Each structure stands twice: as C-alpha cells, then as structure tokens.
Image: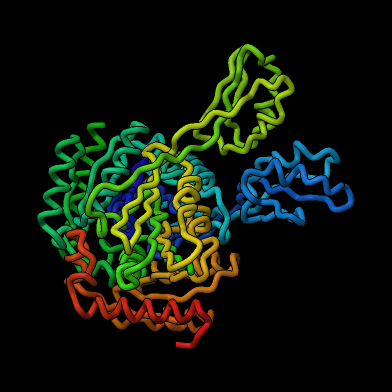
Amino acid sequence: MREIVILSGKGGTGKTTTAAGFAVLAGCCAVADADVDAPDLHLLLHPEEVERGEFFSGYTAVRSEELCSWCGLCRNACRFDAIDEELRISLLNCEGCGACALVCPNGAIKMQEVLAGEWFVGRTFVGPMVYAKLRPGKGSSGKLVSLVRGKARSVCREAGLELLITDGPPGIGCPVIAAVGGASLAVIVTEPTASGLHDLERVIGVCRHFRVPAAVVINKADLNSPVAGRIRSFCESISAPVLGEIPYDQDVTESIRRGRPLVVHSRGPAAQAVDGIWEAVKRLLKQT
Amino acid sequence: MKISIASGKGGTGKTTVAVGLALAAKSAVLIDCDVESPNCHIFLREGFPQISEVFVPVPWVDEAKCTFCGVCARVCMFNALAVAGRKIILFERLCHGCGACISACPAGAVKEAKRKVGVVEVDSDGELVLVTGRLSIGEALAVPVIKAAKSLAPPNGLTFIDCPPGTSCTMVEAVKGSDLCILVTEPTPFGLHDLRMAADTLGELEMPAVVVVNRSDGRNESLKEFCSARGLRIAAEFPIDRRAAEAYSRGKHPSLEFEDWKHAFEALLNTVVRTTDGKPS
C-alpha cells in the first residue's frame, strides 16, 4: 500500500482541490482528510457515512468540592494557568497532565477523559473515505490526525486497495508531523508568492527531517512567473522534483462552488495540468 | 486594545489584514502567532531582527540517584518516558513540560532541564513593532512559541495578533485574551464551512467577533445569511483584485501600492477600533 500526503506549509494553496483531483484520476483508492481542524474534502467527495466513532483527546482534571481541603497545592503545581484563585479548573487551559492530581493530599482531583471529536468512515464514488471533525476549541488535533490515518490505512487494506490519498493540514507542527510520518510521498502544493516560497522551505525541511520523499506542485503559477522561477530553482538546488504547474483558472472556484472535483467539472487548463501532474506522480511512485 | 485576526480556512488573507491594519494604525504592535508559517515579516522587515530563543522544560534523570522504579513513566500522561531495565528513555518531543515526573520521583532523581523549540524575532522601526514567533523545523509543540510571542504584547496601545489557520489549540492560544477577533473568510463553500467552525470556537471562548470577506466576487449570499443568522457583523468586504494578489506575491502589501487599498484598511481600522470601544460606527 502506498500513501500520498498532500501538504503545503502555507494555507490556501490548493491542497484539497489537488487531493480530490488525484483521487478521481487514481480511479480506485482510499481517501483520508487529515486536516481535522478545517476539513473540506467531504464538500467535494460527498461521503455517505458508514461508520462513526468518538475521539477522546486526553484528560482533564476535575476537583471534588467534598474532598478538597483548599490547600492550593494543585494551583502551585499547575504550569498551564489552568487553576484560578478559587481553585476552579479551566477546561480550556488544562493540559491533562495530572500534576495537580499527584500533589493533592486528599485525592480530590480525578482525571476525566475529554470527548474532543468524532471520526467517520464513508463511501465515495472513488472509494472509502476517512474523515473527522474536532469539537470547537479542542486541542490534540495531532492525535486525531493519527487516528484518521490509522483508520484509513486499515480501511484501505481491508478493501484490498493499494493507494491512499491523504489531504493534509497546513503548517509544519504537530498535525503535519502526524500526517506525514511514514508516507510514501509528500506532494507539496505551493503558490508563486514570497509567503508561499518561505513556507515551502519550512515544510520540505519537515519532510526531510522525517525522511519522507517530497515533490512540489506550483499552483496559480502564472500569478508571478519570476517567483515561480525562484521556486523551481530552490527545488532544483535541493533535488526536490517539481511535478508541474497549474495555471490560475476560474473553473477551480466554480468547481468548488458546485461541490465537484475540478477534474470532473472542467476540461480547462487547470484540470489538464492536474492530469499531467498525476501522470508525473505515478512515474515518481514507480521509482521510490 | 488587542485585536486578533483568525479564519478557520488557511489562505483567506489573515496576514494581509493583520499587516494592513498595523500599517494603517502606524503606531502599533503586530504579533505574528502563526509560528509554523509566519509571514508578516515578509511585508514589514527591513533590517535584522533581535532574536531570542524559546525553551520548554524537559526532565533530566540523574542516573546516579535513579532506582529505575518506573514511577516517572507511569505518571506521564503523554508517554514521554519509558524505563527499560536500567535505562531511562525520554521521547522529548512528546513531553509537555508539566513537571509531574519531577514531583512524582520518590528518589528525587528527576531534575528540570530545558530545550529550544523556537525563537521570537523582534523588528522595530520606532512606531511599528513586529514580533514574530517561529517554531523550529521538526518540533511539534507550537503553543509554547505562541505564548512566548504573545508575552511581548504591551499592556497599552494597539496590538494586532496574526493567528494560525485552523480551529484547535494553536488558534485558541493565539486568540485568547483579545478584545475582538476578526474572522477573515472568502466567499466559497470551503471558506463558509471553516468560518462556521471558527465562529463556533470563538463562541466557546465567548470572544466578540466580526467578519471580513476577502476576494469577494459579489456571490456572497450564503455567507451573508450565515453571518446574519449568527449576529456576526461584516466589517469589510475586499474585492477580488489581481493587482493586490500580484503585489502580495512580490512581498509588497497592497495598501502600500494602491490608494484604494490604503483607504479600505483605514476604514476597517476605524470600524474595528470603534467596535472594540463599544461605540457604534
């Protein structure tokens, strides 16, 4: 089984549009939406829910008024400003470390599991899809990303499929690290802007750090040819293949508005570019 | 007064709005809390910043005192410690720096050390101060770097906070403590879907919010209905504008190149400052 994870560094470069395009062109594959903070892939692939489950992100401390002696040792022990002068524990700030429970002389603090979101397995016209939704304001997106990927790999194997396409999160931190570890290939979608190049360097750094081969797609490439050129030069200097360039095309926004993957909705220049890029991905996968 | 700029969906224009407001205000502090992918400096930096390192605590085990009892590993809620025979293994990137292992060790063998997870960069041209949090590549925990950057916010005056995309712990950490949050969105189904999640998160925080619509092409009906239903005021609508996109791609803020953009940000500044002050505008 091979897994392609779509990343970007910078947000809004076109990961979800590209992931949906690859899934359709692959013909038959499993799909995962690992951007659990802001999942959008379901708006293009419309999964029919088959299974769902609860996601517990960790723990929070709960103090019992009856057992509490108001000594305040818990407040002193907390490094996350989660316990105030009235010894109320903030669900928002509590990291779930249990340091307060350990120091409490009366056993007045218990650690309770936090229900932080839901995961789903659904059926789409390309194959099975695993996605998730975090409840508002809850942390541990990295953990949920790992859960989504793990489930997607099982579902992929059970269905006898050989390819998993994972729509990744923006950034370079914990959710991205959880999304990319162990992937066969990271496809990084960037844009020809100073911000795009800056963030591309950082996310490629993460891929290298975690030993995941990375290749690059330049989206909205005609927005700024000189910067697109700088991106190509940068990629060449670090031996990262550029899979292709996608021109700016109004069909992209139109296809999103209609809730359809670009390559289904359009035969315009952007859709054709994605076709070519998918062929390049297949060639690259044969080599790695 | 602290005003945060968030979104839900990435790439809607948070940095464009945050930098635009800071430039319009002239005298302000802008804190770039998108520590994984900080971009404000691209539009504002002229020289070299002052750099300070951000550390998080990690346990250090004095193996001379350690009895290898394994209590430290058992109390760790993040599986950052393992005891194998007479070896202690620390998975430092899983460590949240809570100190539970230090207080739990019956032999007093666990001490506190520190390790670097990022930096805070400060650029100042007198009137406008830019504070940039930057997470080190390969590090997972962005929140300590966000906290370090925000700790430089002055008690008085105008502070703008450029937040990370998403709706979970990094966005919450960046937004916490603001007087108002500006949610920047785009008139597409992705933009609306993620705006809803971001608005729900701000609701959990009881954070007052307004919306700015970027790259508007006039097809905003669902967005307007959503904002109206949630009592979210649309503080500004910026049109889709290739000139602005092109300037942005060169690392130049549109308000410094085009008069209409300059005026648009001055108007937005006026609106949000008055909203935060509680005055009608």
